[in-house]
Image (cartoon, rainbow, N blue to C red; front, side, top):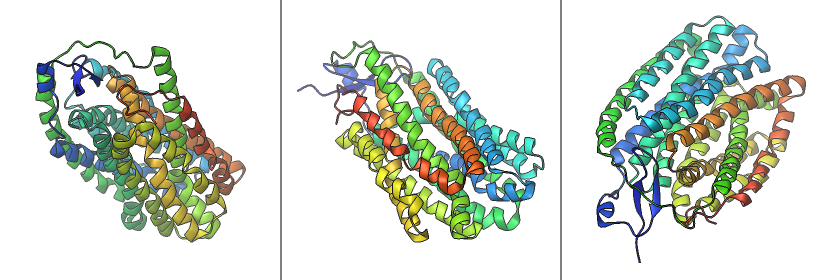
Length: 420
């Protein structure tokens, strides 16, 4: 039986699975994951998303200091996430044509200056500009870092994507804790302290760029034929659209919790801001753990099975959340985070397998669309909360995982990884 091997259609394009490969191509197959590089890019993702999560974590401070309403809070999220959404596909498309090994370190400088500006901002427009600068750093970071994670995967694509996502998810979960321990006691100026994290990320990403640069030069093109069982162009387009919608439903729900869960707990249960931030940390930590296990499970059992389970499986818990007490709410958010986040790696890797020659652009579209719709959704949910209540917002959002039923339209992949 012929073993599948990984080859490349063009310089730095996505690998695809083909049969009957030549001995030369077999010799070029990856020997295994580059764990040091995966650890470095995951750690960088951790630092990047830790800084980004500070924005939502300091919302109560900004709301009190500047008398902001929920719609204005949502617009801050929109300013941050729309920048990332608009630019990530463009960055990915550009790096598909010409890789930029040191762009990650340069992009992180935008986050560095955004944090410094946010720490001294005293006008609403300046706050929006600072949030947009941090979003710009995200736009540069995600597409190329996702490419590096796959390049270092050694063929274990789901595992590598999960390691990459794990850093980001834990970074997101650390924001509320750091806000509770540092920003709440010491105020808005203490945000400047976190610029040191951005500087550390710049150093790590520069080192990763030094590893990445010779990988670019060593990568050779190989001509391959289309797999006879590969989905048609029409099915690929439909599948990409379905995957985008699935990720949107997941990200919109996560965004609703990240942006407004603190206010929900304060409004309904009367907890303090610091206590509410710790409850948010519980959800985000569960989100990180689920993101890590989702990728390897997709490698072993198939992407579609994980997608079905993670999106539809969260529905009973999201439906129960608006009617639960404080302790039960914390428990439910753990299950929601574990189940719902396990789909991210499988969705992204399946999309990469469907469009292997546009890896950077696909990664940018999925990361960018997730950010952008999360931001737009946060703004709309904030407006809805102003006219109704936070509790009503969560009653509406509880039905979002039902969109996961669209997974029935996903195709079977020739390597079996996308099959049920």
